[in-house]
Image (cartoon, helix red, strand yellow):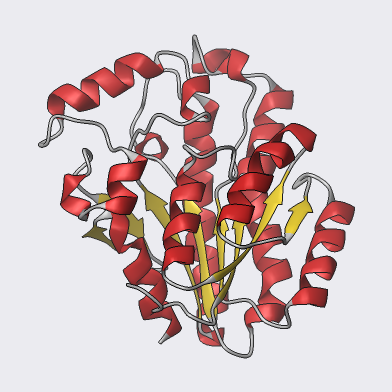
Length: 265
């Protein structure tokens, strides 16, 4: 995999800390030779991101509020001042009020419903629209993260399940729009992992325990084992990649690199 992404440029969105799936992808991309830029929201996340970005040789960090159009405009204008093209974007952004990720879905509030879908789903459309001018000449890849709660009731996942279902539909429509320009749009579902975002879900420990008991390898997926070792070492055995036509195929988490490499050929 070394240097297979040499000369490629990618924007990573949604790194919360070193345990984030987005960071695992970023590290793998960097190890394969890609140049990276990052976005973050708020000073606290920025301070966590800075040393991670530095460790992969990146000083391109942009504060971005995905619920604010002016913030989008500023971020992508600044990015385009540094790079005149973009090869891939990793969209790992989702949010919901954690107080509504417990109890009954029936009690979802209108405000949180709108906010959850705005940040978790609509932001992908805005990202694609802003990235398109930087990808239209040479093609590229836009990758987002989803979860099986999109099509199967998962305890306490509640409105995030609705947001992920919407995200997957958005992925298909964007893929149809951008495919003729050589831009691929895919959603990857890595399964439950012990991340900061996952910890916000009520009953997360029970979900991890259920996966540990029932997955073929009797373990949850672990970020570092997936990055640093053969993909078959991962606890969760497979990932689902949903493409433009809604078809799915299986791949190991480390094969995210292969997806990107294939897309750039």
